[in-house]
Amino acid sequence: MPPSLGRAGNGGVAVKLISSRCDLQHVPDSYVLPPESRPGKEEFVLCENIPVIDLERDRAENVRQVLKAGQEFGFFQLTNHGVSKTLMTDVLEVAEGFFELPIEDKASVYSEDPKRSCRLYTSIDYDKEKVHFWRDSLRHPCHPVDEHVQSWPEKPVRYRELAGKYSVEVRKLSMLLLELIGEGLGLEPGFFERDELNRVQLMALNCYPRCPNPSLTLGLPRHRDVNLITVLLQGPVLGLQVLEDGQWLALQPLPGAFVINIGLALQIISNGSLRSAEHRVMTNRTLARMTVTTFIHPSGDCMVEPAKGITKNHNPPLYRSFLYKDFLSTYIVDTYEGEPPLKRYTL
Ligand code: OGA
Ligand code: NI
Image 1 (tube, helix red, strand yellow):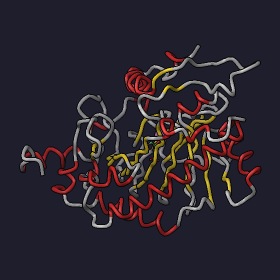
Image 2 (cartoon, rainbow, N blue to C red; image 1 turned 120 degrees about the vertical axis):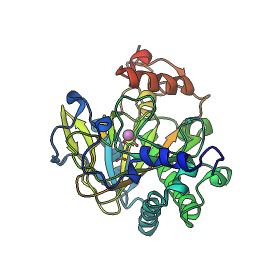
Image 3 (cartoon, rainbow, N blue to C red; image 1 turned 180 degrees about the vertical axis):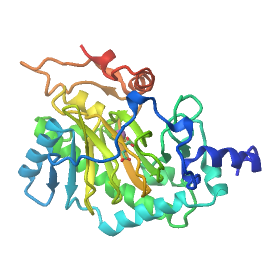
Image 4 (cartoon, helix red, strand yellow; image 1 turned 90 degrees about the vertical axis):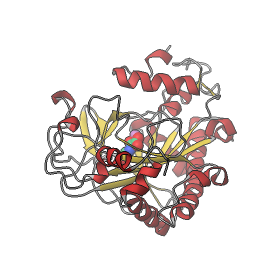
């Protein structure tokens, strides 16, 4: 534990971490959203349209389906994706185990410094935000595993082993999806294999504890992911909602499936052909929800722009070129100010 975190330090962290406050009977005022951003009602309307794609078909069919789902919804679920079911279950279990650790263990990983590569934090930016979100998150880089594993939590005991295996498997799947998308968009083979375009892989364990009144809170506010592509592993509890034609629709958890979501960087590279959809996370009155997300990002110095292979002839670029690190910082500022994240980049 860092020397600065004595008993009082742990106490502070214990109050901030929502996963350490399971005994709450009421939503504390600091988690009550203003009326216009509250979900308002607790029930979920299930989304029937978001496709479930079985990857065990021929390649041409996979290309067609993945592209279509990315264009129409920006979200899809994936079965027969090649990642072992046992590994998926084990990773969700070890993630739950992490949030059940004693506060001393969690406090040793807790940090409010966004520059720290591996850290546990709560909500989004606890000290700056007016209202907190009902989520704790452990986040760290994971590619290549050898370069980062030493920074990961040592507890639970199997954490490093399982997170390492899982990161490698999910990377293979993410690269396959990018390959299928590249093919569908008509890009040159190997387009997404450029190291700087896919170098950063972040893994996040999200814990959304039970909430006494889900109509007043959110686990995560409405947002679009900033990166290329996100692979989400969710347990059996409902919570993720996608905005479709002005309606919030819940994504049904399917055992053994991944939820895949197109990020803004990929929307830009595809020159708007693929869509990055808005989504949010509702809390649940009776059950805690656990998710493990993997984000594939370009490196900070990567120049991101609509792919030249797409923007010829009758398809002029809709977005200007930028350094990914600049995009990341404006994304955060604009998100705080309620500005659309692509406004500055749209031509
Ligand atoms: C995210 C996200 C959804 C979830 O981390 O960006 O949208 O269900 N997560 O945890
Ligand atoms: Ni998201």
